[in-house]
Length: 164
Image (cartoon, rainbow, N blue to C red; front, side):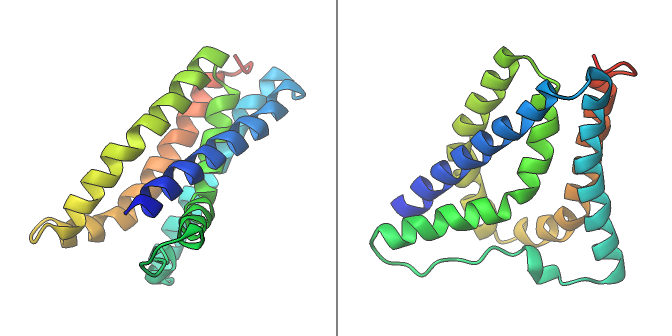
């Protein structure tokens, strides 16, 4: 359990740091183009909806679970899985960070890190719930792409027609 918790925190820290670094491109872009970064989460969401519609691998999004055991190898496995499964996060966080102030980025980053523990606890409870688990898993495949599209639209609206 410690490797999973530690791996999730380290993986999330890597995703946030990579997104902050990637959002630095907004410093070299003309402000009117920063809002176009919102296209990333929109495209990711549309791609996921397309794959769902055409009947793509539904197991593709399932996380690979490391074998139980003790050691740094399991921690590293969880970190790598978190980062690998979080590639979409970078696509979403980057444009959000690019259209935010440093204070807002700090609040977002702190919130992301603070929410890992309740998210893990809630996920554990939900996966083991006898009647809620299956219906939520069925609708999550459709809900997540819609959320990504909404975030992309929000980034574009937040940047405004002149980028700020």
